[in-house]
Length: 589
Image 1 (cartoon, rainbow, N blue to C red):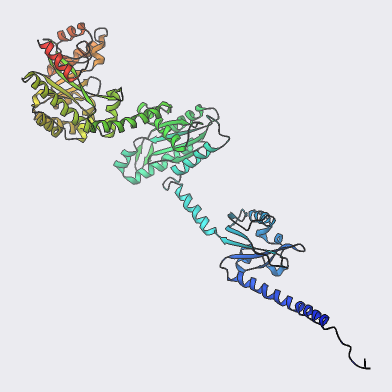
Image 2: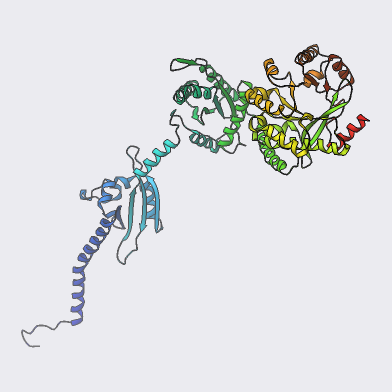
């Protein structure tokens, strides 16, 4: 080598050193570009978001965040500490707990709704954690996003509060009441007989509403609710469950006696009159009670049970406790209603005929037509299906069917005898039938279809029909008399008919209730009542029929007292149309 000449360098080594120096110089710049890109991405998001980095040297910390996150999290990275423990929303509470579990786990994403955990001025968020794809040589990064749902949650809470509260009284409504009862039933520590529900119904409310107006009715409801509150314990829940009905959920420390004592307190606070404007009004209530039991499935069922007892309370005037058989009876009534509708449409019912005997001569004066229903081999008593028919309105169809079949049967007997028989047919009318149907039109159609005349018919109605709607009854009876039918008052003496009704209504026959007839030979009071009815009928020019005659001695006694007709098992039981015709032929031979 010549003196002063530069040494030759190893070309390969020189290039390697040059690449390392270049990479070292580029790395910080690249990292700055990536960091800027991450920040720009977060800033572009319309929601609060932060990127969390976790490495072995620094643990988990916030690498970058947008302004939405800084505002919500109440965090400022300029203070120099990016550790999660220094961010209030991530230091403790439900979000912090779930974030720590997510960082330790292996889920790719996790989303949930939660409050921030603060008791005062707390906020509600939809929170999402996402695990980002890890680049070679880079630490693991996570994306945290927060959507503020506070306004939505508060609005929903406000709407729910309104939905669960009665706007008039300020009390919880039926929805809130049912929720609380369901919560008690769902409690794993619930025990039999520890709770009861009272159903309280205000009396005379409709009269106040009708006579004084809705404003006075509202004022009465508010005052009534305050009285109820004053009679209850702080732990009892009072709710307005319907118009003038209130529900009470109460814990029982000493069994059913606690509920009955509460009912007594309620009755006591209602003894003082209510002042409405210038008037003082006395208002009472009916109370039904039902126990919460393990066999009860829902709040609706509990309240319905209390309302069964409430119905009996209205009838009997004292607080009633629900009996399990009441629900079975109600279900049977609905079952009967459904099947009775089908039976009427299919003409599956029949008429039985009970003979009416003229006591003086012993001849058959006629028959009373009685509805009979046999369902799947079971004979359903009229005392069971007639009230159901009246309650459901089916009595209108049933009544028209009975009139039609009775008239047709009378016509069939005439044809069988080849003569117009000296028989009268009696058919019962229901109070509901008189109030809802045009009975005169129904009778006219039945007579026309069968080709018989109205003077061969007696229509029977009870005293309750007259009390139910006297004006309507008078109009209906006036229309019926145009067909020359006779009108009989059934079960006379068992109701509350005034003597004025006998004078003003076109009544032809009084039927003496069998309770007086059956015991008249051994009970002086019954004998006196029968004698008084017979004297009254004679004075008013009416005929009489004694029901429930079971012996020849009764027949003789009633005949001697001047009774016109008799009915009872002493003569015969109700029978089919063919048997009744044969019975008449035999007795008339």
